[in-house]
Amino acid sequence: MKIISAPDYQSMSRKAANIISAQVILFPNSVLGLATGSTPLGVYKQLIEWYKKDDIDFSKVHSVNLDEYCGLSGEHEQSYRYYMDTNFFSQVNLPIENTNVPNGLAKDIDAECKRYDNVITSLGGIDLQLLGIGHTGHIGFNEPDDDFDKTTHCVKLKQKTIDANARFFENASEVPQRALTMGIKAIMQAKKILLVANGSGKAEILCRSLFGPITPEVPASILQLHNDLTVVADEEALAVIRGKYPSAIG
Ligand code: PGA
Image (cartoon, rainbow, N blue to C red):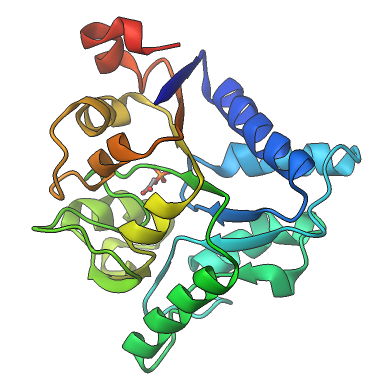
């Protein structure tokens, strides 16, 4: 595990974007696992800037997103399909037909979960998976549980997650209670994982995830077992790690 410190959000975003950019330059037909939430927004912004300068070409890239709210169509402004289209896909040359997000409106949830796992398998797995981390320690929407859910599945969101995401909706009652999420297996089978975190609100959970016991109660703790994990975080998010394990930060 490599932990890279950044002085602030902008620097965190640029460092993480550099890693994604290197991946796409070295391997133009990469399969990128992509994440939503407020943390990766700066990463997408930076990648768009470099694309506009002709420094990066996404024309052969495929993408698979981690998750989607149940019950929201791709046109709903808070759906993750809409987020990706607006904040990234529409601004770079990644062909829209190469992009994948679970279908939050699927009538047959089990069939949709199987379809999504098949999409990932048929692409040959994920080359680089970008991850944020939730306050519960979730990755994707893999929430704390008694065991690690391995494949794409429907999850009931924890109240803490609903509360955290309520800021994007008119009020908390509008936040969907359920979501479809890629499972731990596809995430862990990604060749490389890049986790981004910023802000003091993530400091405690980031430390527990990277240095605490590996347990499904802290889903991100499984990442300790991945052999190519890079964490890029700002100093606020690294505060607890810096206090307890200063030599771990590169
Ligand atoms: P955030 O969400 O980037 O909005 O904090 C992270 C996550 O829930 O994975």
